[in-house]
Length: 261
Image (cartoon, rainbow, N blue to C red):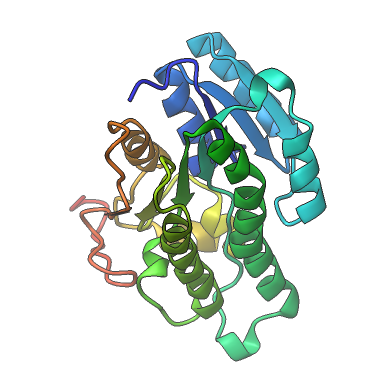
């Protein structure tokens, strides 16, 4: 499917997987509708995409946890940015690595509000337009944590299990329509702020997560997302699970010394 000049809307696009998806779609000529909380980072990304790919980019600040702001943002898009072809629900995060009974209330709320409710708010705002136009594709960024549960990750894993359920349920709700629904579920991904956010800015602890192993890159995940989006219209990729070769489960990761690697 040719996405040249088609609008791809990516949430959480200011860094990591979201920014990599923006670059990957820019490379194939898509028009990019990008949002995140950090407008300054979006401005830098947009400038890079325009300079490198001559991309058509429209950016705006948005916190997906705010249902009213999400609806208002979609309702007030400029007319030439309303026909969203692909929605990439990427905004998401994890906080702490604590037993579920020790999670801070604010961390629980942040994960559930962003990963589950935010995804629902954006989907609810965008899908009616796809139905009206008779075309579209929703691609949710899940996780291996949506297939397994690991100690200290109960809340995060629960939110990613929810993403899987929402993806499957949305496809059922859209049965008989041309709208496609996919989830791309990566394992360990380096070169993102995921672990830095999880550990509240502790860069040393975040770095240890990837020590002695070779994780996926954001570009690896973005390639899978673009592949889903560019299949022929009669082909719906329901789910992709991609893992580093060094990772065999959520917690089983091969690590080696620097010399051996």
